[in-house]
Length: 82
Image 1 (tube, helix red, strand yellow):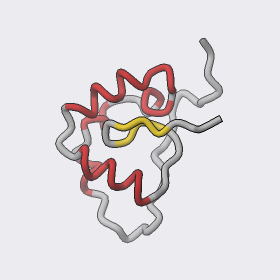
Image 2 (image 1 turned 60 degrees about the vertical axis):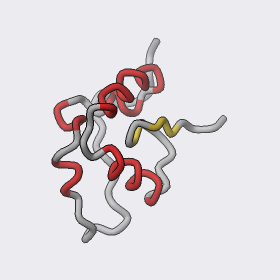
Image 3 (image 1 turned 180 degrees about the vertical axis):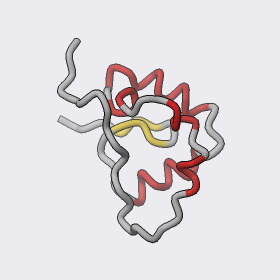
Image 4 (image 1 turned 90 degrees about the vertical axis):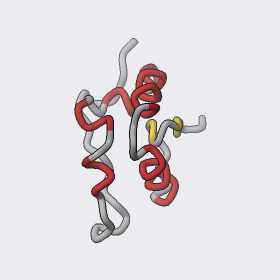
């Protein structure tokens, strides 16, 4: 199954660039490729990585406060509605 997503993606920027981002430095996904967190076919694998993450709640709060519409954030899948 092919995807239109690029192989490597960068995390979206914060709405407030001065906000602390230290939670990202401790995220379990730091050593993983970003692709699995944005490809719906890989969401189960991404969610499993999140389960062991010590900053899962911070990640989820980031996604909610920044109105993320795609990807796995804090163990939750934010998929586009069609």
